[in-house]
Length: 369
Image (cartoon, rainbow, N blue to C red; front, top):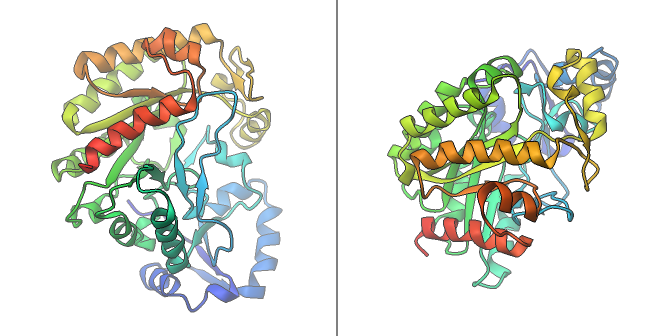
């Protein structure tokens, strides 16, 4: 699927980069602004009632000066899996009403970091200089959707080439799109994981604006799995709306109808949690969403969370459904405490290292290391 791009903004020092030229050749935009031309239009966007809505149709091409390799922004209060983020851009053309990115960035427009050569050099240096016995799981889908802009950027091929043959790393692309064509051309699937964010069918239809339908995502997962890629599925956020148990169970059933358990590297679960400001932003943009007015209370990390008892019940329900199809499928929780892990999945995950080892083991078996 392709998303409409009405404007392209190009920073002065990004004009002559190969990725910039490639994107300009692939997209037809009504307006292209360069350098100093951007400021006035940016001010106009900021004054609109919903800058984020307009910003999802504007693509800014940036020569990024920061670190491309970053640790996942977890929290010390809950178990974190040690994921590494490969920072390819920020912002997303999909407009999920619950999306946490709505409060993370000051700039409402989407940004693509077009200095790909710098990114690849930093990545290669990181993977080469680290001890060979250390294993790394990378993901590009933390601050943007991994594949929604791929028809314009063409990053899958170069990034996959960088990971190909490496014994100490995997790269996970996480998406709500169904654009998987570039993976079908790759010859070595061992270091690459293609993952899909999932939800209940009814919830996704109303809340995940401009995302590919769940059925299209499942069709895409089936296509890449048939080519030898491991696929992942991420249920985050899980929202306990009325009828949630049936709704999420239906999605689990659909996953295992589309993909063999042997092709699934992991399934993650995470119940809705949010920083206080997100609720205000969402209400201003979409009106009061009922599920943000549930019985939330501040967690140890300051985010609002449902009670441990409710989260445990939700995780148990989904885990039972998953295990009924794939008894050996790896299930993990996102940002949960030792007690929640034990009481919902029956696993003793006492610290970050244990969680890292659990997921590293699954990824290492995939690479054939």
